[in-house]
Image (tube, rainbow, N blue to C red):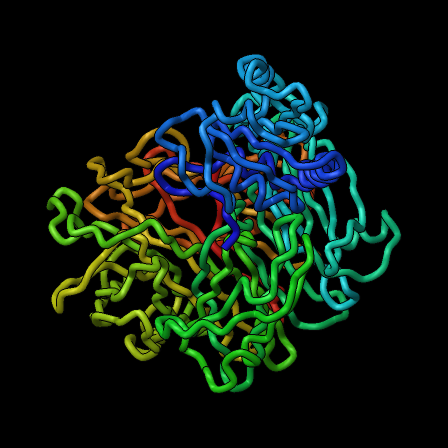
Length: 631
């Protein structure tokens, strides 16, 4: 496993990791390592405990020793070395001392008396990003300096990809935002590098692979696009919606949410293929160091018999992995776990069936989470507690299938029930799924639960904990949702996790808020507009753990690429109800045309938190659907 600290839910993201893993910093680290090794061995002074991550993300350095000033840290293992007392630095035989810290001028002055006369002193200031890419020049390790993300990006004469988002940082006071882009091909080589100014105010914008390929004049590619937003405020993650669409008159169409910006030990929620399907996991190295053969593995969920991925993956390279080659007899609804060793951010997988493909993502499986006994004895004021809402698309046209997925390493069972609601918020059915083991083979087809004439116009369902047969809960309840067109066979799938929703009482940070402390009782969701003749839509759900406002007070705000609001329309959704929203049904054609493809609808509500899924539909049997993002 890569010896790095990335993200945990208590402390948030590790900025030092992002500062070291940035592709430009990685290049500078390689130059630094070569320079240090040319002169001899290096002593590392590690004041902040980052030596292990530094060595993990840097080409090999001839390390003479690691030194610390904290007496309690002496004797600790750090990056394959045992930490020595800083006072021993004076007798070091190294030719250089590397202070593992940024803005380390004062530290260099403090240890001057301990540095042998034959040693030169260098710091991580040598690997800082260019000042033009730094938002806060006074504090290098400010999270806003590393608002970055990766994008699965492809243009291969069959498929193209399109990223859509908005300059949401303007709403938090950002004055001028720009983007640094670096595009890698499947070998990890740099295809192109460029900068783009973000639109003014909170305007929408697009990066389309066809435009990039035509403008920069290169051939087909499959790889990843690295994005760094500069000049931001309020958010240090680049959020986006990503469409994958056919360019050769094929029927394929899918969309996915943004990648998780933080590498993880494990990912889960990868479905095994059906008999007529191929499932390919796209593995994209998120770092400038090679992933060794055997450093990652796939496992049948709950089997604890991982099968190693026995080939190297170069820095920033992209590799397809056909999961059937690892598990020839494994079929849906079995699930597969990726043991990623912190080498990649949230990977995508691609399902091919009957000439159609769809892309979805797997999710972070937490290593820090244990069962929470308090969930079994929640206060009555918290009502039904944790809810995982998902849409039921109109049943005359679509099948809806839900498959619970373990998303914590410690999660050995899942005591679950599904509650089903019509669009007006009436609970029409509930079904106890059972106490599912970690290695379960359960996928619930709602056709098996509901009469044929129920929810013809759609509705939604919620997975909830149900302890009637015992079991444990951790609040990190996840599931895969699969939607299938009954005529064309086209499918879309999405996955997400539970929260508490829409009540004034709180429990351990729930209900979450997009901005500020809990309880989260407001909505700010992004809905992109159409895609090359395909209509945009979303399903908005008003879930409620306890009794809340009878109706939502929702507004649909139409913006153009310049951040100008062109129109706004009201919408009311019943508590525990849902609504399917087509922008074309709310806004005049002229205004949608003025908004353009880079325009978007901002879904706002100051009275409740809505949960949403968005996609596009072509009217010929293809559609996409994934959960929405908010800011």
